[in-house]
Length: 292
Image (cartoon, rainbow, N blue to C red; front, side):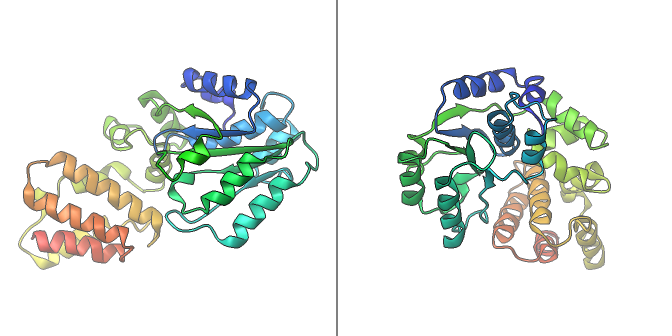
């Protein structure tokens, strides 16, 4: 987990806004920034700054406990993206927020990507309207729609910047991946895609295959099935991460051939199939064989 001081190297404006927000001593904070901008990491860094008594050094006991997810006064509320948070989880969050701190000055509730979860917003809103004096709420969202607006109005909102190319390159170096210009561009300035690409055996070769599909596909079913096999991200398994990296590939395909109506149609259909969580090999076969 990065500290605020470490984030400052690449995003001094963002860190300055966060520090100003902390100086305001609000009971709830909402980080608003594009998906993949590192909001989750920043939420953890803010928790360290609130609980460490050191400004979030990253090295003291409290900071290490926050980073390891073991601090008794910090609760990360998790829900499955796009689905309702379980009633039991919601009750656990509210109950945790109502209790006095065990060791630190505050209790901290962290809810990342709150805009992607069909939360029972009235419950969260009520908790924010009547917060215990020793509880801090840390939220993040890419978008603030009508349903989230009442919650956002109770928070000190901090606008986040997207990572720069320099920050993306640094993350690739930390992952021991050669940051080519193409890989940096294909992340679309999303830190989560850096870690995703780093798990592929040869990310640039894999993703460039999507870019070259119109030239690679032949009127040969066996060859097309070989392409399906080549594009199946075996490093990731048949998981949400596999769906995400294929979605990246489809974006690359569309960007490389914006005027090719046939491939645009195929890519759009494949993207829809991914959203329905169909098996990735079936999605790829539909994309390639129908195009062939």
